Image (cartoon, rainbow, N blue to C red; front, side):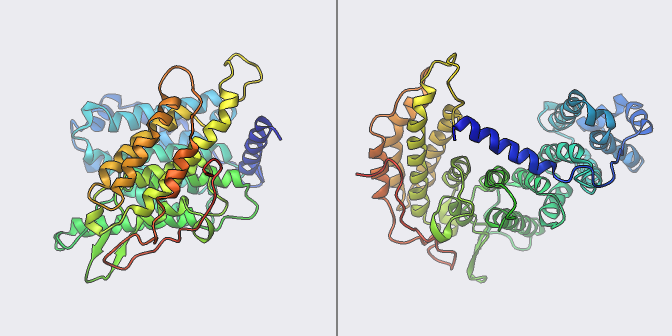
Length: 443
């Protein structure tokens, strides 16, 4: 089967899966003209609230709820379901006019009280849509799921709480859960808690508890047993969202407290299982895209000394992923070197330049983050050995072939640590480093 046919079949399989049982439940339209009129009635004051120019009061509660209904419930409108341009405009209004405006505008510095109050209403109104029958209201629920991941950029706790509830809900559609997992990435990085922190500070304890919950639920989602009737490529599409979220964690573990006598929230282990084989590996086996997300997350684990984390196994498995990346690029080069106007030229298997730059920067972070650890020398060797390989992919207008990329694989193979111990003082998970042979790294 050609790559193009395979890609088309995978897409159709996912589209069919999302559309199963269409029309079996009740079709609902939640929005009405009254809500739209109320929303439009007070444009100027809405702007002042969003910018934090005045604090919301109890009298604003009704209007904040109208705002939430307007922005969320619109996805259930009949016109939106019938016309993709209408749905696109709803998505654009939500992202640009609401979320971008409320999070990235220089005018939003004083709007946290608005975000706190408004976010509670957003969470309720998202839940209204997610509680609809998925089969009958597929377009509305799918679009609301995408918007929910955007809404998480407000970093409002009620939205984060709803995300965890959605992932845990056995009755919710897998697509909703995947976007909820994506949303949780906005509530990371986590903060490492040690003996030196003030345990009388309720904020310290609350942050720790939330980080443990979010890391735990993302890790469980990634390692879960998936329904047998799901296409493996659909699973990889969904799972990648959770991996990318966990990759935002920034710390090897949440807490290392002697009186607890164990490592709590070992996020490093969750990421490294994505890069592992054998009993430690995931089912179905992760795609290269999933491994790239996990590898970047491993490289960005900071301050290993705070939890006595040994990055040796992580650097080794990141190296294996890089070797696979270079090997797959070289295989794809036969196609991508063709003239873009060539009608027989297939789409690239990866956005090689973008992913290559992300990995190059992540490897640089790994060199810095492992400084002073046993893994630093290997991280530095990998950075030096990969310079020309990355340059061939990233630098220049056209892709270049890789020369002797097998040498990089052989270098990494020699870096395998004797043990998969990740934490060296308190008890924590130990990684099984099973042997595997990678295309292109044979002597």
